[in-house]
Amino acid sequence: MDAHQTFENAVGRLNSDYFFREFTFSSNTFKPDPKAELELADKIVWLDDLMIVYQIKERMIREETTEDRERRWFQDEVVKKASRQIRDTLKYLKTYRQIELRNGRGDIFNIVTAQAGNPHKLVVYHPHNRIPTQCLLKKTHQSNTAGTIHLIHSEAYLGILKTLVTPVEIAEYLAYREALINRWRDVVETVSEKALVGHYLRNLPEEKPEQQYEAFVDAVAQKDKDWDIAHIIRVFSERRTTPNSRPEAGYAVLKALAKLNRTDMAEFKKRFRLSMEKALGDTPCLPHRFSNPNKFGFVFIPLMRGDLPHRKNLLFNFTSLNKYDQKLDKCIGLTFIAEGEDSWCDVQWCPMEFPWHENPKIQAALDANYPFRPVKEKRVGRYGIEPAL
Image 1 (cartoon, one colour):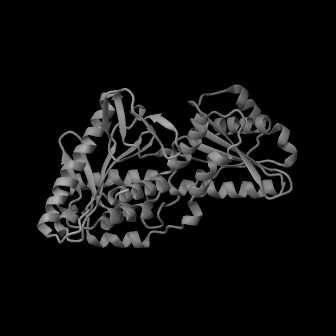
Image 2 (tube, rainbow, N blue to C red):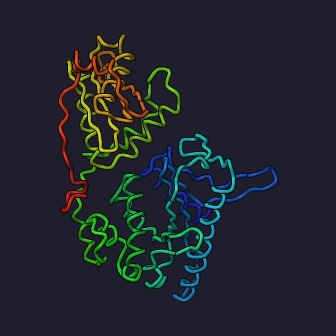
Image 3 (cartoon, one colour):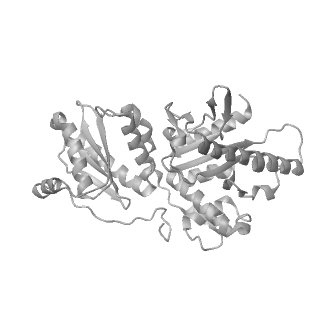
């Protein structure tokens, strides 16, 4: 394996860690017919209507070099060739009816079915240290056919992932970055990538980017342990025991979890842990729940050991009742129940997705015996800096 492949694989592992294996695709060739093989961009992240198309470039050179040579490398490889590969990928997605790729878990999907109306285009490059500063400050290449293609140094890309972390936030940042480029093109190329991330955290798109915005990256309240649910997502497939559940249902759950922002993840994790504790203690407890303004919510149902024979019905009924009570289009229910006398607690999941509509029968059941604790509205600042995003 050559060094370029090593760097490319490292980016793939980073994407898999942050965007999750289910939504990261690194196999980049396909055959539209038996006699032809075409090459896509190096990496693709796809999560429903969220898509990021990556091309990876690394400078490999052993002999002495000059700034002029590194400038030419940057222009030829990063700006021209990498951008062309991204343009070709977008063309293939529009041209062919089927392009099957294998994700990080080994499952195959037809990526042409993606509903991404405006994919984010990104070149991540790892240059020689003799590259001119002028090249490092270049943030974008504007394509007549593909639009804005982001150019980001490998170290800056890692910094973005460490600061923003969730797939939704990364996509929001790239959209915000594109808007800054369109409004402040000349100014953007005088500040660092960290300053642009800080500008996003501050969320003042009408203000000119300045180097001082780096301070917001240093000040952001990460509190990873409060909201990081990556472990729950990573072990989901191995531990999912929901009976008669199709793989599509599992992916529906994982997509919902991966699309949460960090404040929603914190609310999820808090209720998940509390429900686990109640179930392990075999303690009676009303369900916990939360929802967001997008008509999407969760209901967490701690059960006692004696509920085991009725678990399937309880999961379905509580999920249905919560979906209706909160007027949600999408709801995911989770039951927790201790098995045996050890510390293991089994979790089963029930995703429901269909438009909400009035149902007198369900409303009568809620009126007769309301099974939930009251829901309180709360607005939470996402990054712990003012103004709240």
